[in-house]
Amino acid sequence: MEIFDSPDVQSFLNRRLTSLPKNGHGELRRMAKATGIHTTTMSQIYKGDRALSLEQAHDIAEDLGLSPLEKKYLLALVHRERAGTQKLRSFFEDELKELREGRDRISMVVKKDKTLTADERAQFYSNWYYAGIAVLSSIPKLQTVEALATHTGLTKTRLKEAIEFLVKSGISVSKNGRLSHGTKSTHLESSSPLIARHHGNWRVKAMEKHPNLSEDEVAYSSPMSLSEQDAKRIRKMIVAFVKEVAAIRDPSPCEEAYCLNI
Image (cartoon, rainbow, N blue to C red; front, side, top):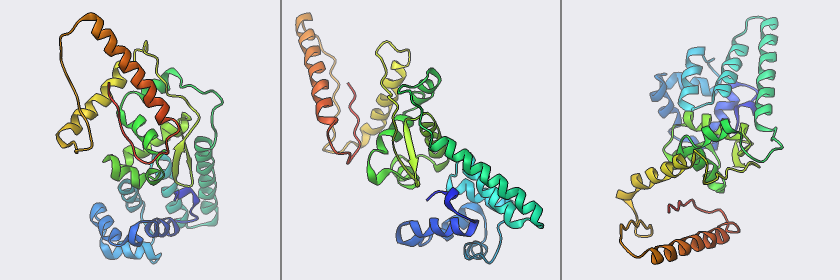
């Protein structure tokens, strides 16, 4: 549930609370501890009996991992609620409208071109989590910020920043608080100067995973000496294997995420 769909602070906080497992049982206590806001005060805020201060709103935005645009929207909601005159309230109404339009420009407009620009490629391949989030968001159970945060261990703030880039560049689409695939291709040619970074990102993740491999997971490294002819045979086998993997992968339902390093 996006903050831009909420008419006021109380509505946003309550709708978020009820969207969590067990209707958010224990969430108020957790937020109070994380933000330093007294539990009684936090309860009053959620019930609408007490208005948020700007400082409290900022702390809550940080705890929830709101993106910079979402944070501005929450603070604008607080400003509007605390406005002492109709003139000032109208001013913040206009600001909220501009922020909603800014969200629409980012999340609704999809570029017609199908490939990433040079700058977009540089950012996309700078860290594993850009590609990781794009892949994970193809799985229905992992299409929300909360689910992605739990699965990846990334902070909500980092996730929000990455998602904003993925949506803005057309790699992903955000709708009603859920992330899915966009229209951009992220294929990287073997001659690209970014290819080493791409391979390195996922090899590092594989090494991090190695101490905790399950019985169903496979890791294989084998320094060897053999004839040049046999080495060429093995290379052809690997190329054929990769093509076979792609033929299986493309029509396969998106249920879980895996990584193949060769």
